[in-house]
Image (tube, rainbow, N blue to C red; front, top):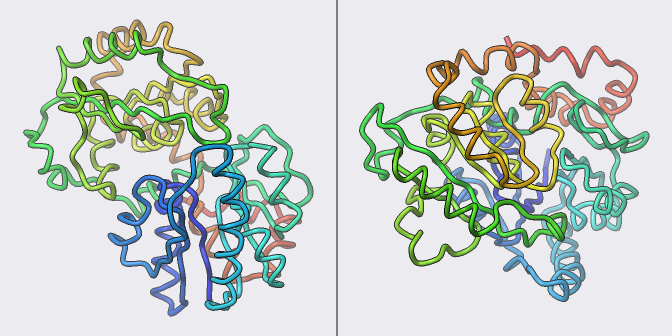
Amino acid sequence: MRILIDIGHPAHVHLFRPFAQEMEKQGHVLLFTYRQKEFESELLEAAGFQKKSFGPHYNTKAGKIWGLFKFNWLMFRAIRAFKPDLLLSHGSLYAAQMAWLSGKPHLSLEDSGNMEQILLYRPFTQAILAPDVLPEQLGPKEIRYKAYHELFYLHPDYFRPDFSRLSPLGLKEGEPFVILRLVSFNATHDIGHAGFTREQKEQIVSFLEGKYRLFISSESELPEHLKKYQIKLPPHLIHHALYFASFVVSEGATVASEAGVLGTPAFYVNSIARSYNEDQERFGLVYNFRNGLGVLDKIIQFISGEEVNKSNEERRKPLLEEKINPTKLLLWTVLNWPNSVERLKKDEKIRYTFSIR
């Protein structure tokens, strides 16, 4: 098969990586297309995937409107040149619309539930794979499964934490450290939303720097006095840091969820509620806050309690016992396309019993 995967965010590279690696092992040919938003190119380069850049991502409203025309045209040209049998994405308007225009099928993964985006790509998409915890109803094209997107690439079948990969950080083994993830709130779904106030951010930093080695990962440029905390680690190694961190404080839902499935406690601070983060709270892995109020109190409570002494494996064992390995589901779906779609819709047992053991 020839498969084109469109990337809209660095996390999407991680999302499709194990699937793509397995498909390439079996002799299939893949092409990744992307807009450069943060470090998509570096992640694709590190994985050794064939890739094609459509240029920089646009943050302004005017830029996003112009990008809809520009990136659709570039996607159409990429499809004509590569001749894929199937397109995959995480809700990409460009992949869905240009797949339809080119007479190609499009399969989407979805976990954000942004209906304004879903309504734009759904008419041009054959099927939508979504976690069972997503509250939004996506219509007759949806196929639900029992997992989170972060398990596509952080399931223990694919990810093995290795402390030696953190050597650029200068950490001693066992040295406590914390990761603070800050987002820019420039994405379409971020409009009108926020995380920490500036004052709350300073309070969190002041508290953490006095007790832990502090590393900050930020979508936007940090102010001068915080640049000393900028995490200096190749982006494809960030999950090793998330695993070995004492805990994670994040305005980004994905990073909070990644920490959670790795067994590292995370404090998610964002006015956007995410169902997968809320589901992880029942396992004691992610603590959810709509704003910065009460976050510091909860962190103090956590580091003073017994939970802090548990290992990552202890914390995440109940989650792994309940969830499936979703990459296996995606592989089966693609390799048995298009008959797999109807089978999955009719047989709930298939999509809920791709055992993790």
